[in-house]
Length: 158
Image (tube, rainbow, N blue to C red; front, top):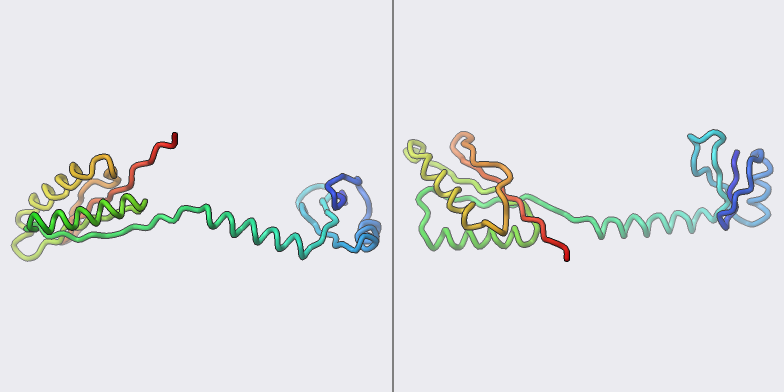
């Protein structure tokens, strides 16, 4: 096996017993870091400290990860102007927070005959949200619901 010292210097190819003896002399552990290599690579290190540092790195990576969820807002085709503004405000807030937004227009009974009202409502919302979000999935009718998906626009880093 190829052996690496605790300070990172390479010792070279040694047999397993010699590597274990070196690790014991230093009071450290012998850890196989690349078993698929030919010959396998082992490193002399403090395994408890190594696991702790790995968990810290994993925690930092999770912190830096961006979580993007899909929020949903439901409209009706005969929505009033104030209700429209309120729900549009919710969609704007979700987009500013970095979430995707699924906007659904629900049709009931005879409203299904005039699905163009739902299409007009979604197009109006797309125009109102221009700059905040982009249309990711155009409006499509799925049973009694018409949906459109918005994604937040990427912020320019300067």
